[in-house]
Amino acid sequence: MLNIKMSKKSLKNLLNTLAKANNLNNGYIYMQITRGDKGIRNHGFKMYQDQEPVLSAFTVSTVRSPSKYDTGVTGTTVPDRRWEMCDVKSLNLIPNVLAKHEAQMLKVSKAIFVRDGVVTEEKSGNVLMIKSGKVYSHPDGSHILSGITKEVIKNICLENSIPYLERPFSEIELLGADEVLVTDTNSECMPVVEINGMRIGTGEPGVVSKHIQRLYEQKIIEQCGALQ
Image (tube, rainbow, N blue to C red; front, side):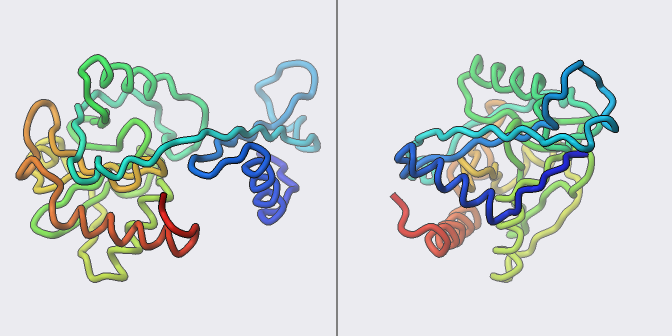
C-alpha cells in the first residue's frame, strides 16, 4: 500500500545523518511513514498508488540504566482491548496509551496485555516467560507485534542451546513463572520481578534472564561498539 522508493541503504544513511545533526550518542530515532498527502481526505488507497509517502523522524536522547537489570521492575496485567491486527505497526495506540497510564497510576513500569486469559504482549514490547530453564513467547500472529528485540533473543537462545518455545501461555502461568522478561529496543531484556503485587520466582532477576541480557549486550557491542 505504501510506494516506498527509497532503498534501505539510503534510508540508513539519512537516519545516520539525522543522528549526527542532533549529536545523538545515546538514544534512539523514532520514524514513521504515511502514504502522503494528495489533497482531499479519502480512506481509499488506490488513488494514492502513484504518490510519494511522507517520512518523518526525530531523535530522543536517553540514559541507559544498567542497574535496573540487577534489580528488575514491577508490572501489572491489563485487559487487551486492541483490534485484531496487532501485527501491523501503526499509530492506533489508544489502548497502549491507556495501559501505560494505568501502570503509572499503580506506580509500576510494565503493563502486560491479557486477552481471554492468554498473555499477548506488553504495552510497548514482547513478554517472555521462563519456566524450568525454558523460554516461552507468544507465537507471531495477529495478536502481537513481533518485536526485533524478541527475534534477536530468539536467535541468541537457539545459538546458545537455551530452549525457546513459541506457544500461548496464560496469565496464571505467567504469575507462576520462574522468571519474566519484557523485551523491546529501550528496555532490552528487562526482568519483571513482581506482577499484580505477586512476586515472580525469587523476586529477583533470575539466572536465565541475566545470561540472556549478557548475551544481548554482546550483540549490541558487536554492532554498535562499547556500551555507555
